[in-house]
Length: 363
Image (cartoon, rainbow, N blue to C red; front, top):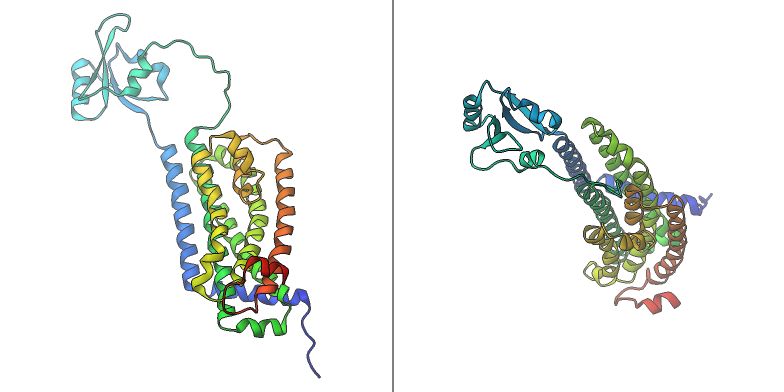
């Protein structure tokens, strides 16, 4: 009695298991993933401890000048000295950056003593400045804005390019060794494509979830609850957008790789896709403070996985905008799967010279 052929779903899962298993058995993949997680954890911890470190200015005061720094207790670390002579000795020994001693021209009535140069932050605190009225009290600090945008862009760039290249190399290797002829004699061509995309999507999402968990743990350990709360919704949106954005790119990487028969020729068909993956990374580096560019990025399918979560974090996106952007991404993803599957089917068994795009689409 002959065994029945596996169903389409079973065929997809067999290829998926094969893709996941081959990666999890690869020492290079496990080591690189471990290094990535260690670097991510170290970066979060370093940023947290740096932000929480004591940045107060050490200043020596005398009983006559102590009251002058009372309003600035959060910005200065006060060391009390018995008199001006002791305060000067504290500066000279390096125990404090400056000293505030009696004497000096009105309206201050005191003098700042420093070694080579007076701390600018202390002089700014003691300066007489006019009242300031801010019309826009919202917004995110520029440094935080930059690093959050950079983080989303870098994670998308690394994960999409790493696993997209893996799919491309796997497709060409199977063509080059003729293994693909055995595979498609047992399972449908589309099941082979779907399994490759699904397997690498699971691996990529595993890395994304791992990085998100590391960020949560790191921010919790360094007592950055406010930042963690602000990153909650953006992280969820990033995971959702990345899922469908990667499926879109993975389908196109597999189709592009099927058009060539040698590893040396992969770059000729996948270079345009590499540029699409790199574009969001460089755009958020140079234009993260440009609302027009970020708005456009959040709706373009290839950059929406980066642009929209950043805008959600900054509070610049209305509640309905992520939903509209996701709908556009889903429609584009479906179209890419259809086109990619057609190119993949029509090119997979064609050996030798590179298959032209027009031929792959009409074959």
